[in-house]
Amino acid sequence: MSMAGNLRKVTHLGKVGNLRKVARLTRRRPRVDLSHPARSPLGSSVVNCVTYREGVREPAGSDLVDAVERVRKHGDGFVWLGLHEPTDQEFAGIAELFDLHPLAVEDAVEAHQRPKLERYGETLFAVFKTVCYVEHEELTATSEVVNTGEIMVFTGEDFVITVRHGMHGSLGPLREELESDREQLSKGPAAVLHAIADHVVDDYLHVTDAVQADIDQVEMDVFAENGARADPGRIYQLKRELLELKRAVVPLGRPVEELATRPIRVVGPEIQTYFRDVFDHLMRAKEQIAAFDELLNSILQAHLAQVTVAQNEDMRKITAWAAVIAVPTMVCGVYGMNFDHMPELHWTFGYPLVLAVISIACLALYRGFRRNGWL
Image (cartoon, rainbow, N blue to C red; front, side, top):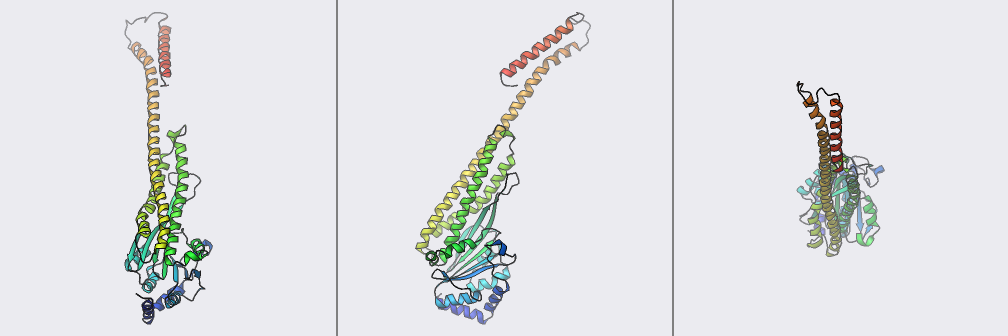
């Protein structure tokens, strides 16, 4: 649809009252930049609404509708609308204004989606899983290591809508970084989509580096002198958290590859070059996670082997002491049968002789087991 046609569509929506609904929605909640937690009151779904023209941020307008009208009237620039966990009612007017597909809108509101890339007409809908490392002094069987969230991105010819879920993964610093690079931002909404993808993948690499430190610590504990006493719950916990990270990283490979290689109208060839770099970083994170998974399996097997060896050593010690104790038990059992005619029963030195034989036999068994490493 041409820019003039889009403008007529917006005007028509205003006639039937839908634009007024969107205008009321954007005025109802203050625009708050969630990149600064101190200025992030809960309940503000509209994070920011900014218009960019030739890579420069324009002064704030009255509301979202005015910003869209100006962009489509002049035929250049784009609007970047940021939302944080909007409700169905809050998103309904926005979806109608930008002609967003109902299925994509449902995914953006409900969240808990798998990383993906979908095309709805001239609009791209991308889902990214954000991750952050949860700091902890000591890893335990219940420690949270990886926390996840989501960023949904609607990308059109003259707009970018970001919908964020979770209390991390703020795009405020990213927006500031983009605004400092006028040349990159002037490439349009695709540049914003690339910046978000690059930001998310860079976080993957940071988290994998932090997880590696936890894995190294667990490995040192397992292979320490008393490694058999290490808590296997920590290993299982790391594997569970690594699985959460894997669910965020692995499914994103195909969407990023499509953005880097396949012709897409919204994403020009110049931006696709940048997506190839993102894809390389994503493959690096994917390979690290696969290596961590194999390493944790090896550590767990080594720990189980150590436990088995320790149990075998304990059993050998128990068996050796049982053999030593069996000698006096047998001798005393024989002499405890109370027969009248038994060897040396009435001899004066019979009792000391039996004790001496028992002591010598026990000492010989003890030295033999000690020499063989059983005791």
